Amino acid sequence: MRGSGIYSQEVSYDEFECENEECGKTNEAGETATDDWGNYTIECEFCGGIYQESSLSQDKYDYETDYDPNN
View: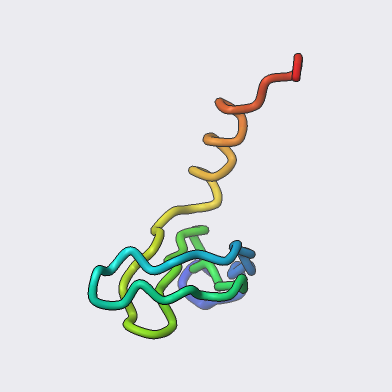
């Protein structure tokens, strides 16, 4: 049943620097959980600012459109 959390998945992300001018700190690589629909948010661990909002379906689409089988 959607909304129960049983369809949640882990998403790994690379180290990033917070884009908030007042923070600018470096966040270590880590993992975050999706909701049951595959949506997730990556936030700065220091200020709570949102670094990235995406979904598993958007990530798959981006990968497929950027993938060049000749390279």
